[in-house]
Picture (tube, one colour):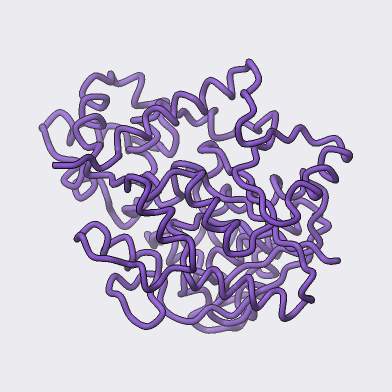
Length: 369
């Protein structure tokens, strides 16, 4: 039996994700076990997850995932490189995964080539030179990767971009997992529902009060209906209250801050702007919107640069599937501290951080009018 790891957010879990499970078992065998390392209450784009972690994990387990474990906010709120590294480290700690599967618009051709290019000895030097020319980070990186790999317009698609970071993280970690790209059709950034809609389009539809039931696997719709959706807008007053109480020293320590970015954000806060207006005022060619979004969410949660460097002393299970308990026994035999979903967190600073951020997540819940 082969075991496949997936680093994911499932924000929310939908039919496209279920199709990925089916493709993996079609490729590797019907007895293939699937282990998901899923972002908890907060996602990498700098927002609260649409549904609580246990609800999204349960939807994945009902659709065929055998074991779903949590990526804590110290991983899920990192930039792409750190997110990929943290996800790979989490799956490696389990010690049971043979492959790391990821979606790819080019079926892995570009992510694998980009990962090889990033391993080039002169990659960092060439990237710094491109940045000094005034290019935004993403454009500078893309230019250098294209020059080294010989592939024009390399890594312009979201799944390929993250897939390249996964491949790079596997190499740096000397992981036992082999990369396994899965062809991903459609546009992850699309905001309108179509025959194969993105999670982004589903969240937009939900925010507008529209049903997404037809795009969900059997069982997921009932889970989602029983849970309150969470939106950034619902917690805006709580976020602004936190921002307006922070002094300059507190802003300087916030994760994702650098080179005066905190001053720019703090000025916008002191002007009495909304969260959306703060994002618009602070973003630039150098600092894209997602970077500012992560900074603001980390400020609200009280997460510092050092917090995002922490390694969790345990791995927490969010949901079991058909063979999950047997997989968990294998993990524990290998020495990993694996906590069951209802198990009390150990007494430590990391657990306190997780509990604090979980309580703050609830302030984003949509309540009945």
